[in-house]
Length: 142
Image (cartoon, rainbow, N blue to C red; front, side, top):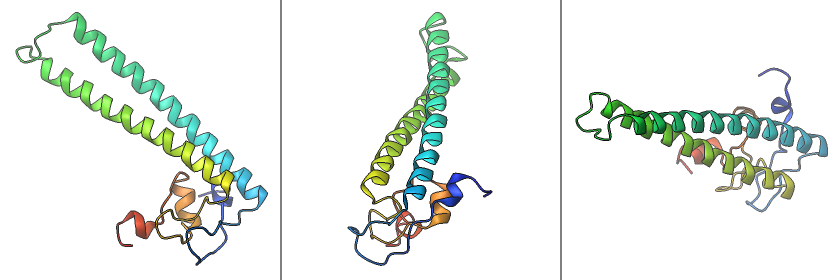
């Protein structure tokens, strides 16, 4: 993945219960915060762009026919509006997830699976910095 901060987040191995902390060093905590801040910034920019798209769809449909059912463009406009609304909701959920994970960095539980208590794994954290579960639990195998 390169030599970015996400690649340097390496939680200590742990086989203990969920209450066991990851043992991230101060430098690893700083790296995690940097990665999460960048993820937050990207997500916030995505939310702003999606909100502009949504507002544009709503305003264009407001200036057109109010009858989506009989308007040839009505069904595609309704689909676009719902699609962008769903993407916007997902992005807002991801932003909330980033905030929760930032709290986990602070309390020392970052990198530990919320379900099984085992380490999440550096590779998963590098790929999904906001991950709260290990691959096994995320796949529903735990």
